[in-house]
Amino acid sequence: MINMKMDEEFSQASEIYRENILDHYKHPRNFGEIKNPDIKQRELNPLCGDEIEFFMKVGEKNVIDDVKFKGHGCAIGQASASLLSEMIKGKSLEEVENITNEKVIEQLGIHIGPVRFKCAILSLMTVKAGIEKYKKSLSKNGGN
Image (tube, rainbow, N blue to C red; front, side):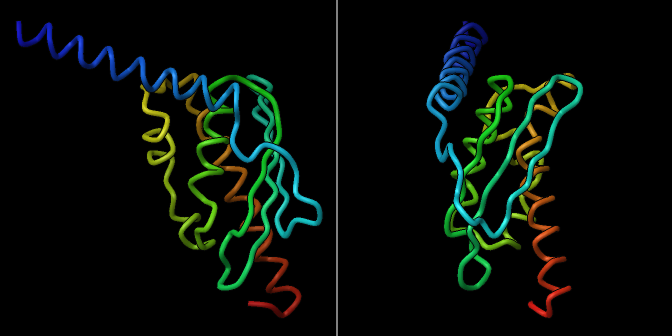
């Protein structure tokens, strides 16, 4: 009886997370472009065709003041980008660089198998690549 109740609770929790993923897929947060972004990075998952592009404005103390993304792909990839955009807004570049793949997967709230893993972390890979490129351009130009 206890195991059945736990299975039912787990199933209900999984359904809530699935609904959350579909909501972020159908109604992505921070979807669009930023004119003249400080960071603009596009990445592609050649295995499935998912494509994502992030735009970020960096303010004082290297904090992400605004973030937008656009792209196309599966529900997991798009939901991941939407969730990540909410996570990083207002965070410093250093804080964003410390976000792990596991944290992104945790935010999705469902089990991600090996086939969908790259879909789930493509947005994080894109953001981190953009930050790395941005920092290199600053050091070339005598910035931070």
